[in-house]
Length: 229
Image (cartoon, rainbow, N blue to C red):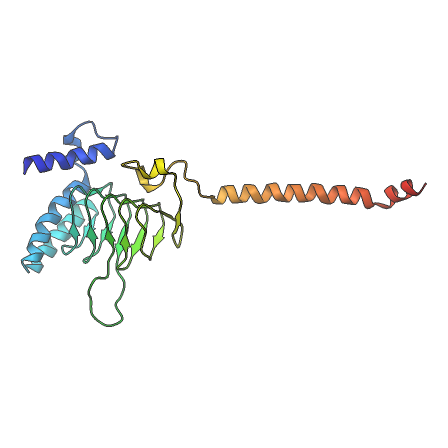
């Protein structure tokens, strides 16, 4: 048990440059939330639902992280900071990283049967801050969900999702092969941003204004009269 805890703390330390020691990592709200979730999940599977919910509520009060006791979570989940929500039928694989204010939310089943209504995150997934992953979808292995993205469809393995509604982007192989990308989005992410789009439009407008000015100069009455003479 001690070896597993040490490995867990080391896995977090490898993904976060802030802590200087394992003792600091032990103070992380995500670590406390996961520890309490393990107990709550064990009680939930034993059908001691009230006790499981009680621990869930205590954990939320202490950490600001709401993990339903029914959620199934693999090894080395790193929840960086708080205010995230993980639903009852969510399934999270190994070595997943979730940043602050993320929702793994569910859909309202139209047939009245609960069933699987929350996402599945496969091994190595990174979910950026503020992202919303909604419904019984599968986020493939080593996929990245960018900050504030809204994901409602299955995500292919290794894809990077951005935007509202999130769309897949191509990333260089050297980025895809990296073991860990902070916040789920490469720093040299090749997508066109709103700033880039605005700058491009401004440049095109300047070029068009210059062409119009040249055409006006050529076709002006003074220019024509000078040519006729």
